[in-house]
Length: 337
Image 1 (cartoon, rainbow, N blue to C red):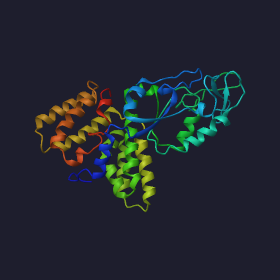
Image 2 (cartoon, one colour; image 1 turned 90 degrees about the vertical axis):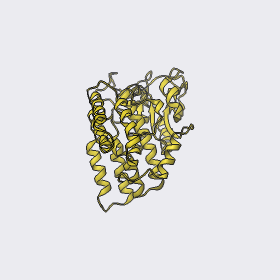
Image 3 (cartoon, rainbow, N blue to C red; image 1 turned 180 degrees about the vertical axis):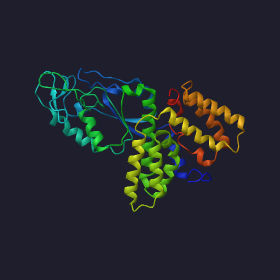
Image 4 (cartoon, rainbow, N blue to C red; image 1 turned 120 degrees about the vertical axis):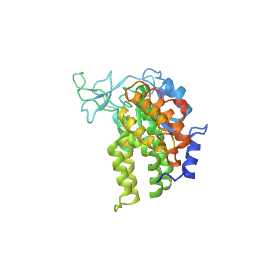
């Protein structure tokens, strides 16, 4: 897409739907994080951020693997035992017991129904829902050095390897929070603007909107995706879509580094060269340098740059998700990174 192209009606319709009062984005979440009394002690682990903030923007779907398996609450605590690669699920008051088959059956059925989700938030340290660092105990009662993900999490990741997944506690980290929300919205837009009507045109339009997001995340991925879409390979549209989606979501899998943001901001400055006087451009460059040194947060140079791009930028740059993201501004996800 060149700088004279405009935002398509499909993209505009998607943006307006994303900003509507009714949350359209469906995200799975561990039931205990929304205050449901499903934990082993009959209580919950309510997440204020999920329940008070994200609840206004995401349509949450709750699930508790233990309750689905009929274990009830309260119940004896469960833990993983044996081989870290193929552990048993045992009651801690009955070492050597194994309820893994009863546990896995309903979770496996449930995981098959989740292709409508755009993210999942899990409970930390849980042998079922933990994202990582879950202990597996040896016969002598000591944990193995090797740790792993929870059993339900493993099923989820195997079925949907590029679904944005995060633990509730990690959302307290500003960079991880911003990254997770970015991935959720990008995943949602890809499903609705590309997968809903798969074509090379839809794929190119999506890429044009996310060009600078990818640049800020990964230079190798930026080059690889551009090459994938420009080369006349003998690939079916399904193969090209799969290759694009896997590379794209992998590029977004970790928070962008400060130097990559600076590089992207500098590229966007190029759209102002012909229309904004040099003294103003120098002021913007000074603020970008302040961000590079860690003196201000990303929202500072971004807000300044957005102001001038809004008035002097091309339609192409105005539609960029990097400069005009469609996630709600009240989330303030760039205010702390």
